[in-house]
Image (cartoon, rainbow, N blue to C red; front, side, top):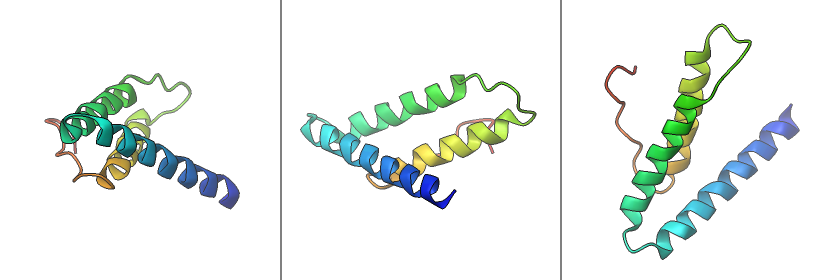
Length: 84
């Protein structure tokens, strides 16, 4: 399990670096990061999670991971209305 967690962290850092590099090549890096983060949140909200009783908890955890990745580049997003 530790090896899997280590690989996941490495993938997250690689993805964050890739996003940062693309944003730096953008004319408006902050807007690019904000739009990309919002798209990632939309994907997480739309994922079909079968066979679990508490899908809201899984989605919240995934959204938190997205915010953690983007917090390396800018402050995390404010919670949306209706979310805790």
